[in-house]
Image (tube, rainbow, N blue to C red; front, side, top):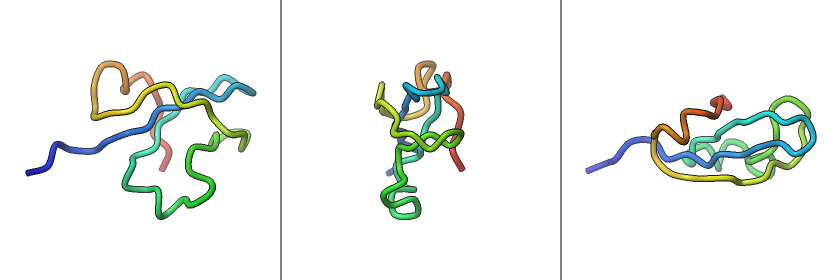
Length: 62
C-alpha cells in the first residue's frame, strides 16, 4: 500500500521562493536536490510529508 507522494519543502533564504521536491526525485537531481529552482541557492528545509495544507503552500520543482 502506498500513501502517495512525499515532499521535502524548502524556502530559499536568498530570493524567498517557497518550493518542494518530491522525495522520489532525489536520484534525478543528485547534489542539486533542495536547491532553489530560481537562483540555485541551497534552500532551508521547512517541512516534509505527504500532500497536505502545509505542503501545498510550496510550488513543485519538476
